[in-house]
Length: 338
Ligand code: NAD
Ligand code: WQD
Image (cartoon, rainbow, N blue to C red):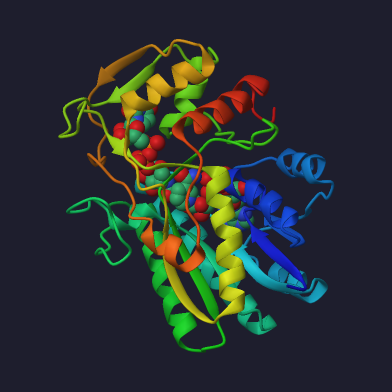
């Protein structure tokens, strides 16, 4: 594939790992990121790891002039669109910022792509679009019922992209629904660097292990699951980004719209995660069971069959590997990118 991939949100957690995977697969990248939730240090480290630092354009996906300049100055053949806000609780408090950033931002990006004649897009969607599923595992044809403004932004952008692809058969779109991405690059040089109190389980556990927080609060142990704690499908970020590279190559090879779950197909409870992280880190993870978190569901995991069929992709890294790599990142970089 000649030309570069524009990676929006490429300085962030998943985006930085995707940049590395793209470059290693021979696809040059240009990053557009406003750094509202990331550091340019992540891209410098990507450069150290693969010998080619991604070009960073500091700008906003809602800035049409900035997008037009990127498409005019670079030979962009495809876009991987990670940029957006992602905190479920915050989206309930400031919904307009979420709709503006995630929906208006995606519309602006699409209009600029259309004007530049760029037809290939891989979009970061989320299993949050399914809401509380009637059964598990979850396959792509399950009804969509997101329970938060954040989840609704993802569903809306999926609908917009579906209509955009349908309007012109030359357009190619992959909607990738991630389950729970965790872990870090095995070098320990890039990883997840949440600002303030982590919202998600794995970074919270990692911060307890490194001594930054004194204990984990387990949000409920009275769910109808084997040990009573919430069950999720944690997927190693390296598996996730390998799925992205395959999805990109797939849409470039053949036109159309693909909707694909990216998960392992395995459910892991909060207490399973605590035990696995203790084993990986050699540290104790003290925890206290508290009330359920509003909006949480009991159990959620993927049917990853379509990804296997369409992309010949399967997540291969174990829970142990996720914890080992997360711990290496956390212990080597106790203050993240600093
Ligand atoms: P992240 O916050 O680390 O990365 C997002 C990046 O986008 C950041 O670098 C941020 O600075 C940038 N950004 C945000 N708004 C922007 C804007 N308007 N213009 C330019 N840049 C902007 O998050 P992440 O975990 O890497 O998530 C990446 C994508 O994957 C997001 O769209 C998220 O909704 C989606 N996703 C994440 C998860 C998860 O658990 N991490 C799960 C499902 C889906
Ligand atoms: C996992 C489990 C919690 C923190 C969220 C978003 C989803 C997607 C991934 C973006 C649950 C429990 C957590 C803690 C705990 N992101 N927990 N103590 O809620 O499955 O998904 O991130 O698209 O949209 O909703 O992930 O990591 O927050 O929680 O007990 O301090 O850990 O109750 O059972 P979740 P999570």
